[in-house]
Image 1 (cartoon, rainbow, N blue to C red):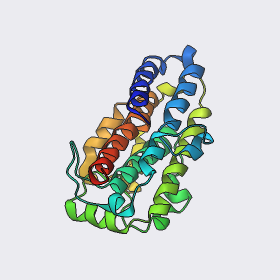
Image 2: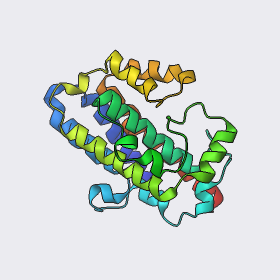
Image 3: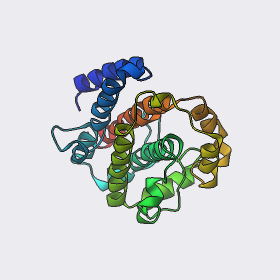
Image 4: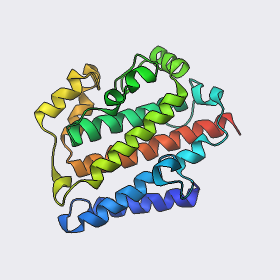
Length: 228
């Protein structure tokens, strides 16, 4: 994804922000979401019609670059694998538990075991030793598959929504599930408070689109620094 394409993505995201809560614009908003979302994920998600931001990240990316930690870049020193995993975990939690009250992809498709790491939470609140361990041990093939599976689930959830449902909010029981399933560490209550103030429209805008975009940018900066 070129700089111009990223700018266009940001402009279209602003348009989505302005219409997503309007029931009369539901079909347009859902279609625009799918367009923006597919641009962030590997092209297998959008039938390979054009290269995506994730395609650009994975292209000619070495394993040593993927796992390198720490890498000091503006706004982050985390590894590329951490950024990929964290953004996928956040989307899995918000779209499936808080949005659709469904089982997380992490568990329904056994990725908790396939990723070969003990970390099952969102990634928030990890210390340096934990990020280093995760970066060294995570199964990269399973990570790429998990990210694609999360994207596919999100797209099916949004495609099935009816006008007005973007204004729904998660219930206390759904927020309890997040903690019961250890999807967010108890020390990170601020994150639950943040999500608690959002409708589904808000969760779609941040994290399901904007949050992914931000972390892909951070991951790309790591790649550019290490593979000039």
